[in-house]
Image 1 (cartoon, helix red, strand yellow):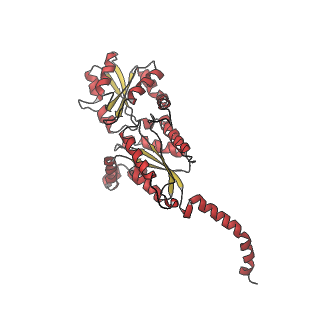
Image 2 (tube, helix red, strand yellow):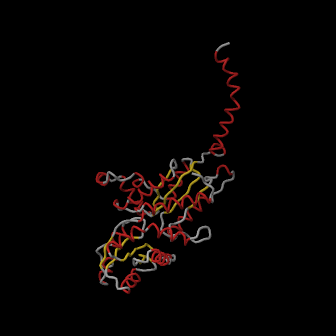
Image 3 (cartoon, helix red, strand yellow):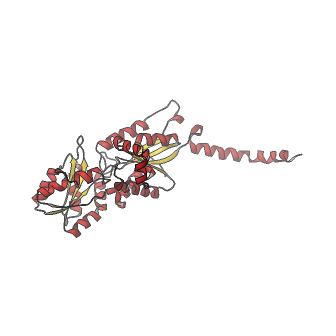
Length: 331
């Protein structure tokens, strides 16, 4: 009897164990051996300003630390901004002058492409977390993207492209009864304590410039202003928007009515990009800085995005956890 013949009984004895282990492996991947890995997509509008990218790189680091071993991808919702980064990929001069550009940014894709790439790589359980401040137009569209992809069905259930594809909520919450948006406002106000402390040390009122929206109500900013004022009663705090209500004119009127002569002006936006550098702190006649100056108010511009505040990034982490828990997803 040769050695190979002698090994056959041993192999037969192990066969039930091998079958069990194989079945466990297949079950873990899904029916027909289709993978079901888990991932997180962070979806933000994006920015072309290299100086503002720290907001995104900080958020990526924070989320990856919070969910070790989980794949985390970044997506930009703005078509124009993505096109600019795609051109930069093939611009030798730009690449030479910006050697430190993160690969996550340089090769960034839109949310649809990012989700599709993940699905093609075997990720069928995905949480998409928006970087949006509130539930405006961008969130509305992203909600439809995710809902549309997640609703895809197949004749045989095992070939459905996603097991679970869910969306987290913006920092200031969203309409509905699942989460109390008042608590979201309170949580956001709490992590802005460093801004209030800085304004207090300088003896300035604090004025935030939010983005707002032309098509959906931006009244949440006025409500958030009230929450901020209640949370920090010792420092005058105002919030206006580039689009919608409260407008720049409303904000200037509210500040001058209080006879305030000096303000700290800061973006209430995830990144300090084009809006912060031009609309807020630019030299144009219609910039927020010059509009306040004409009204007799001195401005101290702080060009720093909310994403550079680690505690603010922690809100996104919590919203990812909330979305995962609601969908019974375990990372």
